[in-house]
Length: 334
Image (cartoon, rainbow, N blue to C red; front, top):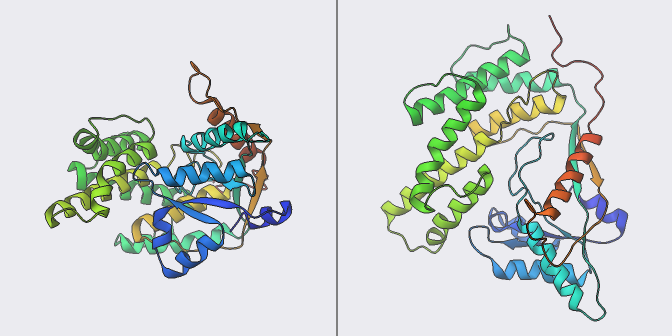
């Protein structure tokens, strides 16, 4: 919906590629999404039909096709996740079709960066959420601490609870290292069982590969109840690993932006309660990058995909350029 104004500006509706599960959440979404130009892709397998549809629509060029290349919602404005390779696969497939069409044509990619900006009062928005979380932890309200210290204390407690659950006791050391150890404790045994060991570098890619191995038989209804419940537990562990990966190291270090603070607190609440409290006023800055012409063939011998590298470079530049100026420190020195 945020891209609606962009669609209006260019005078052209969009097609969207969306995960199949969003079409199954409620009847209203199932009704609206296809009418907004969205079609589903089954991420837990090789969805040849969806990929071919995406390539065909791009090659026909009646509308731009929107793909969300990060593959997961992370709640951090200032850190771009690993970009999934499906974007390049679709673009190159469409470029091949355009090159052989009569008349022939080309395919371009425009990176689009979306930055959310909170225009409200952080000191009014954050404390009620922190109080609710502290209540759930059976703590007295920590209002004698600064917002930074309250966030750090809650984050440490939530991580320690999961360490006790999975490792038997709280760990010591820097938080990023503890998170990495817990993620490996969650994923490595599953990767050993399901995909013959770790084969992806990034957490979202690791989880995606595991889901591809675990989910299809569940969706097909072929499993006895004990095995079905065992796989649900595996999915829960994978979800937790992906949640942990959404807390970037040093995200609140130094003098963080208002949005970084709010995002972290919102993530705490959502991870604990599975619901997200809306904070307003909120606006979005939508930046459109320069066109990147897509070659039908991938360059051989290059480290990484050159197309995805070019997309990432533009996205990171636009996110940096759209960062609002700082008027004052959120965490003033005592």
